[in-house]
Every structure is written in C-alpha cells, then in structure tokens.
Length: 201
Image 1 (cartoon, rainbow, N blue to C red):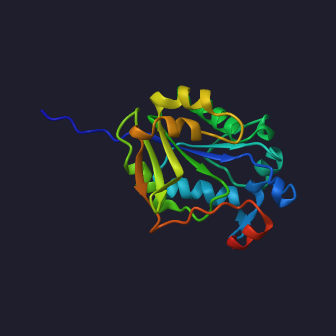
Image 2: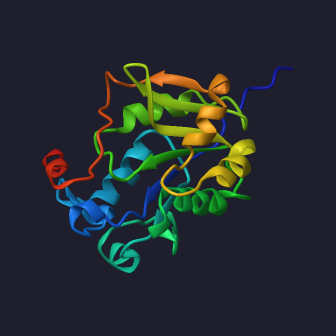
Image 3: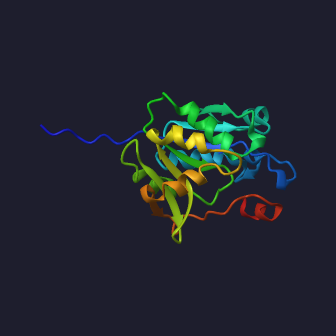
C-alpha cells in the first residue's frame, strides 16, 4: 500500500503595516491600484498563487484599512509597533500563524504590486516540508516573496529587528536557501517614493 504525499499547507503572510513615510504619510495598504486598495490586490495575489489561509499584518491606519478594504476570509493582526520597522510585522505575523497547522509561511510585501500570482505559485511549489527555505530571485538576486518552513519561524522571528526583517537570517542560512527564478513573470520594484506611484494603475 502506497501513501500519497500530502502537499504542505502554505499560509500566505502579507506584511501591510507601513505608514508610507516617504509618500507623505500615506499608508501603503490604502494606496489605490486598479480601483481598489493595494492590500486587496496583494491578498488576491496570495490566493491566486495557491496560499491559504491568508494572514494580513496591518499597522498604520489599521482601523481605516479594515473599513475601506475587503479582507473577508483573511485573519488580520495589528502590529502596534509598526513604526519600529518591518521586523516587528514579521514577528507579529509569524506569531499569529503559530499553532494554526500551517507547514510554511510565504511572506509577501504589500508595496510590491509587480509580483503576481505566478511568482507566488513558483515559490510555493518549491516548499517540501516544515524546514523549507525558499525565495524568489530576479536575475539571480534574492527577492520576494520568501517562504519559511514552520520549523524556522522561531529563529526567523528572533532575528527580525528594525527594517531588516529576515535579511540576517537569510544571509546566515544561504546554504539552505533555494532560489526560484521569477524574473520572467514578475517585477520586484517597491512603492517607496512619490516617483514609484507611477507603477500603480
């Protein structure tokens, strides 16, 4: 009797807490894209890529984001320390996922709308088990999204400080990191400055 290999449960973890300091204090989650808040677009991308459940970490203007964006079906956490940088949002998100039964978390940033469902699906497909460590790459350079197997969450969270997020962890574990080229299906630009708003539709 042969047992079928069960696919890992890969949760989508959307970090959407940023206050858009260089955008004049416009919360990134609420930037308009294709007629809806950017956070909705990112949630849709995670779902199109096969992630579920989807967890969203809000911060700046969290109440307004909840009121204006359709986050139905998502688990929403609020990072009250969002001003300290992305690391606190990553810690909050991984903490919210603990105990949910997810085997891995695929982390997407709300301000990278050039990354779509095809890139998410590629990174998700490279997940093997709870020790997996996978990242999209663009021309061989590591980028987002990044996938962390659940067995790594505690160590990733411990090193997530300031705006570094998981950068130090990924550098320290580069030998275990699987890179998945996504440059042919996605663009990894950030929406950080007023000039970057030209990427939004």
